Length: 250
Ligand code: PEP
Image (cartoon, rainbow, N blue to C red):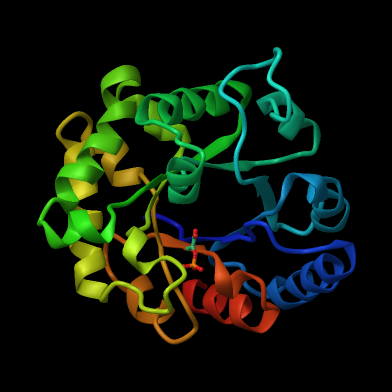
């Protein structure tokens, strides 16, 4: 039985004061929700703050990106072990915004996924197609290519210590999430693709859903058999909304 996981992706939002109010509210609000797991992926400068407030609460925290190398001359980059120094359990890898704006290739994303696991974090590998690909009927092809970049290089066992997140790009930040049945179909496709290589890994694998998961659609999406949780952007910045989504998972 897979346990649901809800992860907030704060993106490039927040400041010390607003973060404290939000994190305090999550700590208070999630205290009684014990039937699922919860995490927030905060901007790197606030990892120390997240660690200070969340340690010992049962809420995990993580980062939104990292370098694929363990150290080196990469000005402005953050090494995996640096995230570990701040107690990160999770790191988002290959978010569509990084694939698009920072030109991260499938190859680089796969390398990051591998390095994160090597240092002991759980990478959340984001997969998802553009609107154009979706309209051209190429959604499965794109998602399969992104997934295979990890599977063909590192094997299905690699996924045992990671998490997947299917986030159709056309749904992210639009307020118009995928219909639950449509989300389910892609989640099932992903799980079956992993099952071709390893049925046990596929059965245990958490596949989160992202892209305008809101209070209004969370319960329906989370009731789908292959939707194991949510990666939440916009609604993770408002305690009341994030808590309501967590309650739906709980
Ligand atoms: C995201 O970008 O990871 C995301 C899910 O964003 P939103 O919930 O705002 O669509």
